[in-house]
Length: 137
Image (cartoon, rainbow, N blue to C red):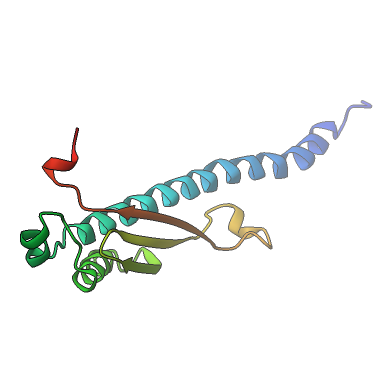
């Protein structure tokens, strides 16, 4: 009868550890997914901006030159379609490339009950530049 209550002790000791590991698995997966989603959004927006070629400069020089104003607008317009997901964005463009940074806020599902494990932000950046058929090998 000396073992009476030993299972209760194991339950009390291991339950928090199991919940912590489950939280790391679930919330870690959410963080990885959010990072990939932010990268995807940034890449799509940068490509959309790089498509805004200044046709007059292209005809004059034969080289693709980005129209910075239209490129910024195109990149930010594409990100506005993800309005609920994107918590911060920065679109910048020059005549050579478009740079986009996207922030997504993640709300933990299991670890959120632990003090200090609140929302966190995943950030990703991407750049794109125009390429013509003559630029490819």
